[in-house]
Image (cartoon, rainbow, N blue to C red; front, side, top):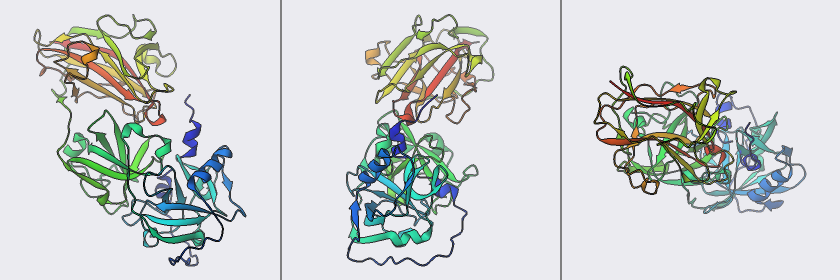
Length: 468
């Protein structure tokens, strides 16, 4: 069983506020005194870092501030003007190169009219409870093991500074995501929405399947990495079509409602500039064949292989990054129908990057016709780790030149999705390879890391290449 590391509890929930209370009506409260004024803080100023440190010293257990006369200092990085944030203020400790962030949950609408992005504010802590909701440390009021929105009168404890700083997004890559960056305003360069989403002409969050939030996949142009942009179905830009190009996107890094993966939330369409040319990877798409070939070229069900590192005659098992490679195992508990199979997992690897290749022997596609590929996959907490099925016609078989070759995605192949129940086995479908010419290798490429959001497990079995 997976355990959530301590640092996860230090920085855990961005979307619960918008998800759980989107239909709640405001109660009647006194209008708070929120006039901007020269600052005279009637207490001790404390940093976000010190508040998070105190929470850690309390074993990440909820506690309520009382008679401390402390005021939390931070810069506003969220805005509810466009409706993508709801009854919450996200704060970070510095306008540039921030190192700590926190959410303040308040039962108040239209916060943007009083708290501008970049404005320094001070939050009186007495009466607030600190805790964790859906992955993000939050100030609010207790609701069992979670933190709910504090009543509107708590806004009277916020003092606005006259300082409004420019918030400079923190440039990081998707592969760098970790708990330390949660609740910070980050910048992703050289990213784009996947071609499948663009071809489907998707909007940000107005499709029929978008219930509370629309989730769209962003992919890096410079690394094998993807993440999720989450947009509320109450956002006023939900109907905008996804930008077709590549470029830069800025937003608040957080976790999804179930705390299963990282997500980014933008304040408004002004937070992205994606007009550059796309960087779509090479793909091979012969479609799905009507039937599986009746004659066999390659068949591997791993039943004859010893458990442990996958040392299979003619195959290549290569750890490009990190200490882990594919291994043969027997699954008698989670997916017993698989029997023996191979798996790759980055869980507890300790590696900042895990890239592992399992590559078939070379196949000559000119010696027969109507080739097909089939395989089965399953996953356990795959989250933002990824399994790609790729093919190369110009790799020379040397692992030292693996990244010099052209590897194209077999886009018709189905790989198990993170949302699939972990005991289910998913078929690839009968992947048509009849459009491939010459000699080629087929590879199963795992991308992940020791970070909890990217440390998933993929299981693979019953790989067969056939022809007519």
